[in-house]
Length: 167
Image (cartoon, rainbow, N blue to C red; front, side, top):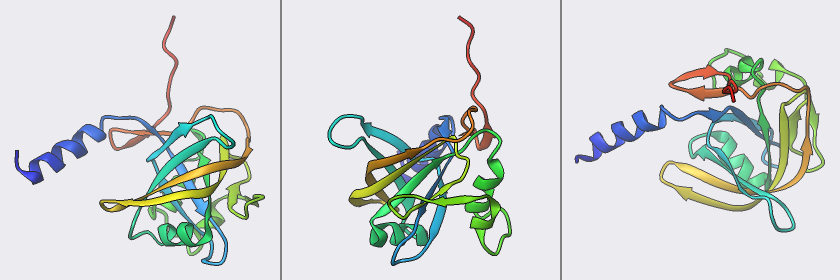
């Protein structure tokens, strides 16, 4: 199989997966940045701190800032927060994308959405560049919760919301 064909098939396959939509935010000496990501996963709930990972494209200014600030927050979006995702993905023309919603400053210094489905403040444990992305492993230090709701998901190149299957 040719490399271009493998890449195209991989992108097609990944387009068939469903992922939560998250804003990864950071603040500190390198500045305040945020980016929309769907590549976020739990690594472990055990140990002194639970751990998770996020993947951020190496050309995103957020990647450099996260590495230099040493902290980030994963803001898990609720089904009614797609506008926030659009702002941080660059689809909304805002001079300051942080103006699209209210923010709080977490104990790590990383900003978190004032009303998230969930927000997980992390300290960078490991930053590994893999291909075009930085994979940041974070030790979760603080959590915040807003109003209950369903997570915003991204699948088949569109936003969606999960629905429970009947028993």
